[in-house]
Amino acid sequence: MTIAKKKRTRDAVSILHGRYVKDDPERKAALQEERVNADVARLIHDMRTFAGLSQQQLAELIDTTQSVISRLEDADYEGRSLSMLERIAHALNQKLTVVMTAREPEVQEVREAFHRVVQMLRRSQGLTIDGLAEKTGIDRTELAALERNPAYRPSPLTMHRLSQFFGVPDRTLAVLAWAIRDVPAELREQAARFAAQSDSFSKLTKEEQQALDDFVTFLRSEA
Image (tube, rainbow, N blue to C red; front, side, top):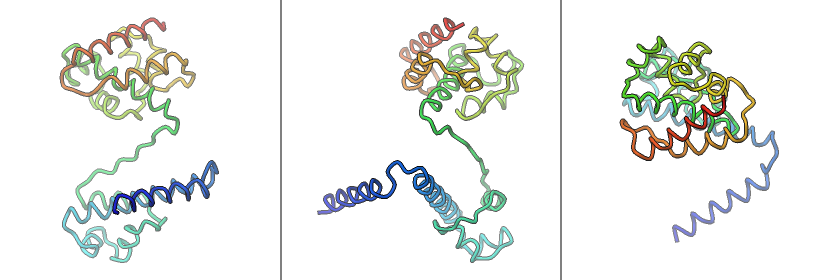
């Protein structure tokens, strides 16, 4: 009975979504905004309760009122600001990070391939991030950022130094980092395949090494 009820509920949601949202850009945008509001409200609530604080206690920490915290934890509230979220993060000993991701899946796949290939090339040479920073003259914080955050876009100087060190053409790296928007279809396809095959283990498996070798060979052929 429970399973059937859940299935009917999902069907009803699908029907309502198709009836009232479909391909309407404005309705899609409104739905996405509601989801973001709900996610932020839930995050504030979860982090507060995890810290063992009441709404009143959190309010006192950031010099506001309990009613403000209550509104911030309401999914329908639209008045949240980055400055308020930063105050809450600081009070809860957290770091607020704002990340923008590409809407198009293919853009995300290409960026994912960039940060994965840099990470795997480093690992294949037995280098730590500090070791690669020392050999290339790139700041370690930038290397850490471009390996761990697919949305991070490195500076042209960083891409040039990586290109020289790993023997991958400048322009090809720039395309992977989405510094150049004109991505050839074949490169996009190869990048998506590589990103799907690779993973972040401390040591490359044979399969990862083969995927890396094949992808780097393809990148070098794009010169």
